[in-house]
Structure formats: structure tokens, C-alpha cells
Amino acid sequence: DMCLSKKNDQSSVKELVESATMIESDELATIHCQRVEGFLNLLSDVITQLGFGVRGYVPVFMSLLLTICERTESMRKVSSSITAGGNSNDDAERSEEEDANTSAWRERISTIRSLCFQRISDLVVKFASSCDFASYCDRLWGSLKLGIEKLPSSVINAEKPPSLLLLLESFSSHPALIRLLCQNEQSVEAVFNCIATKSRHPVVAVALSFVENLLTEGCTIEDGLLPSTVDGAVGWELVQRHVHLLVRQFTERLESGTPESLHKADPRKESNLAQRELDILCRVSELLVAEKTEEEDV
Image: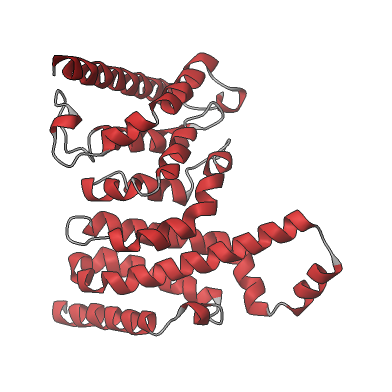
């Protein structure tokens, strides 16, 4: 039974890879969105069940996931421009001519993007130590540009953290991935801005984990150690460059008390959140003082 299961798993991976390698960017638009969703769900099962057995296929999967991201990003830009331009006759004609598949894509675009972000997160977290994801940065950050710009406004009063925020948090979980954040510091600013007075507990909790990961270089720096003394550590540098924004966000939240929208929140969770915020502020202050003292001693 185990041999049969293993053969079935390998067969699933082979089919997945064969289908992935045959898809080009311009061909993706012709594939029905339900098939794309099916692929993204199947990929989740494959990564979970086979783990490091799919390491050799990471480049193929990353390339296709980025292609899907680019496709959905371009569709979002078109939708935004149409909305901004109003309902002209040309837009109406374009809408009438739009085929059923494109229409279905537009209806499912948020779901597909969310699944795509989740699969990228699965891959980078699992293979951070064994794969170099730097070569994908240009395409990744390019396809996330609009989403990152809108992230702070998208989390206002949101019941749960959006998949993009969770994806960015995953990039803070490992030293090799934190270096990729250095190539798009707008993403760091966006996450810091999610620590806002109108952000609910689940959203702020993820954003705080992002900050905590940066301060500890993905939980690899022990308390008492200065990040500047650790070779290759860049998480603290990212925090330093945006420390005024971070302190401002914390200050506004702590001074505002409990906003109207958060009255239904669990008091214990909110208390825990406030404690985490204070702990981060204290840690940042300690590091800033320590850095300054070290510079003066030199």
C-alpha cells in the first residue's frame, strides 16, 4: 500500500510538472480559471505530502506561480483603470465582447491571487534554506506592486489578515528571505502601516510577528545579542530605516485606546497584543541605545 501511495504521489507530481512546464504567460489567459484553482489546490497537497521531494521542481512551480500573479495583477490594473475612467461606450463594448473565460477570471481573481500567495509562501518557507529565491525577486515584487500599495487600506476593519500580508510575513521568517525584503522596502512600510488604530487583532498580530522576525533575523538572534554583531543580519537594518514610522504607528494605537470597531474583541487577546507592542518598542529602544553607545565607544 505504501509503495502504491508513493507511486501515486510521484505520478501526481509528474502530471503537475508536465502541465506547469507547458503553460506560457500568454497561454494562461486561455486556461479556464477553475483549472488554475484546481492546480493551486493540488500543489498545496503535493507540497504537504511530499515535502522536500518536490525540491527539484521548485523553479517550475515558482515560475508558473509568478506567471499567475502577473496575469492577475494586469487584470486588476485594467479593472482599476476602467473604474477610474467611468462607464464609457468603449468600456461597454469591451464588456460585451469579453469572452466567458475572461469574465470568470475577473470574478475569481481575488481567490486565485490568494491561493497563489499561499503557494508561494508554502514554497519559500519550506525551501528557504535549500533554494535561492533571489532570482525571482524582480518578477515577484513587480507583480505585487499594486497589492502592496493598497495593503494598509485593505486591512482596515478586516476580520482576518489578507493572504498578501501573510505572504510578506513568511518572507520575514528566515534570514535568506529577509534579504529579499531589502529589494522592496515598500513592503516593509506597508506591513508597518497595518499596525493601525483601525486594524483588528488578527491583522495586527501578523504584522507584529513580521516586526519580531526582523528584530531577531527570523528567530535566529538570541536576546542580548546586538544584530549588528551578527554577520549577514539585515532585519534590524530594515527596522532602523523605518523606525520613525513604526514608533508612530505604535504610539497612535496605544494612545487611541480601544476603537469602536474593536469592542467585540477578546480583552485577553487585546491585552496580549498591547504587551507585544510594548515589548517591541522596548526592544527597539534598547537596540537604538546600544547601537549609539557602541558608536560612541568606537
